[in-house]
Image 1 (cartoon, helix red, strand yellow):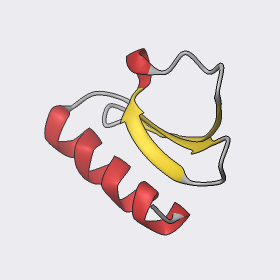
Image 2: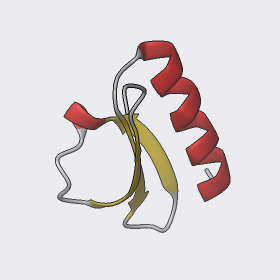
Image 3: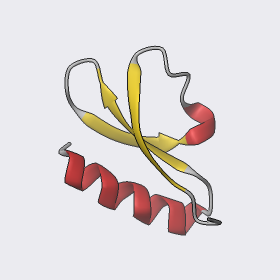
Length: 54
């Protein structure tokens, strides 16, 4: 997924689930989004965090 799509998806997830969502870049250069508590950080670079409470 592109970086722009990952940010849009993360914002939507954060607003829907009301949890912090992290946008990350994987080792192959692709981007993704996942709940912050599911990221270990070993294989990804965190790009941004969408927190619905902030």
